[in-house]
Length: 171
Image (tube, rainbow, N blue to C red; front, side):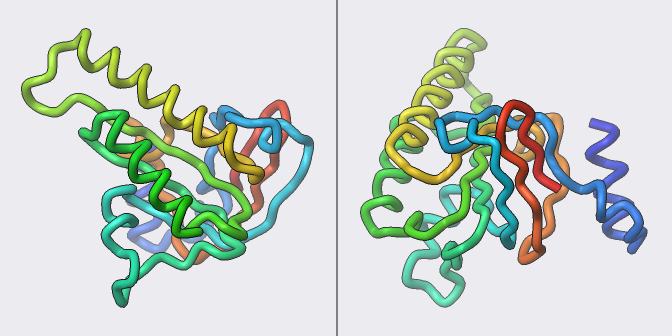
């Protein structure tokens, strides 16, 4: 997507005037906490779900306490995503997070048929919604970052403001 490329190039080449527009505006609330009219200010961290999973108890383990966490993945089936999310919940990775934002979980690896991709995408959305229903913190979904056609840059370890409610935004 051209906007993704433009924002990324501006960021890489130090055009800092674009930093204040780096954010997400197409956020879908997945639970009641995300629909509450509220503002969260916290540092952003996250990444690929499979890599977050293998970082546990390693020197590069992700720090989630008091953070807004973004999570995406590519070419994973819904059953593996829910298994990993349940494991991370059981080991308390999501304790004290401010919010979780799920990005694109692209499901079109080589060999999949279009109907299988659609079924897997629907199953993934159900999986993410189920996760959201079982957690008290705001959980949202967007296709604005991940491995899809649109992939807006997000700055790690940077303070962001997450406006919740009817038209959630991350700035």
